Image: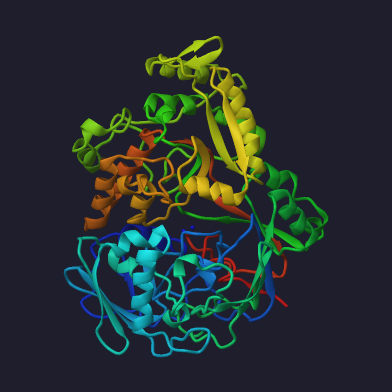
Length: 603
């Protein structure tokens, strides 16, 4: 949506030790780490990146482009304010933004993983309550997991299929037993949102929209909303967990308001006028050139650049390999060669944004671009027959001379297309069967920066006889077509964490490739990817885990599924001067769980 380093010199120590060893809980504990032990002791006071004495009060408001027609963020159907998933629901455990996949108790007071790692048991806190004052019960937990796993959003279904049983083992304890070997499952079971079972009695969970106001277990409750325009969340004054260590000093702001706008321009103007208290800017040139408005110059708005150590993920134009025109890797590489990154980056960002050269750029997880060696090579050799050129030998993106012509890239693209059986006839790239290499690029309305990129890119494609039509549609149509994989190419962004695991199968696994509504947008169908993810989930050492991730990264990059754009090693966040945050920034930086969670308003 989204942590290897601690303060100062301790950063290196944590990064090198947290991935050593296995999950070894011989008895109930306050927290759990994927490898090694949690950094914080059982008696920790608060998270290290939180002000435990932050004052209560105030209001924050942020904008979103688009609309919404549902308040249930856990189902496939509908458009939902994205923050509801994080602000309105509590889980058994909570993720630290300063450690790779380390969880501490929230609704659960303890976690106990079996020695074999084939089951996990949680004990629910006696004081845990829903926003209506009723206790959180084992029945609520089991119902939530089963319902989300069978009727909920696709993100929940994969892990539920790996659960053999969920059983009540005591008045406040619940145990999940697994049917596969998967080291990550114990942690995943701690991170599912807990819903109140009784609220959904006699209702169709999958069809819920705006009529069902969630009964929450988190610090915030929905106070007011207007369909498609805004949602207001108010802090629950009776929230049960304000003094547990994981929550101490967090969620102290009284009101969190989400405003919706037709496009990014209208949203930015609202921020400039003071209608919003924060604004994230992804365009480096705009950050430098358009943030000199009066509220910045007079000090009412602060420009903050918040560093992070999380992977870049992948952002760019995904090619749908389910379509015949993009089945051949040489055609996909031609699309990458024709994309003049250096020229576009200079035009739109002043040349200030680094390119995504790996799905895990900006982190220790990123692949090397030289020939594979050691454990990475061993893993890839087992699948050598199915891997694309560059996976083992090394793959790097093209680098142009920065001129608009991009002659070298254009020539390379033409050569690749010729190898794939295409040739230019009457100015049009044509197949042996006489079909033109034309396609559409699906874009959601309001994406002005994406359209600026495509204006340059499509002109470059015309130089090789490829004519791409940009198809701009509203959010509802866009979601429907993406879920049905009804597109040729589309803009996509997929954030990745410092602890990749099961979710990688949802992003690019073979099963997800054929499942409508999945997040495998490009239709990637490489069994070697499934094998690398399985390796990640079962190894017991840091070295083996890193090798598996780097091997996965190589397969994805050499697959040429996306024309990569850029990333930023900092988050550019402009905010009202009254909004304050701790001096220490966690490794994940500005990420879900950071704003508004650890911020406060200075009255």
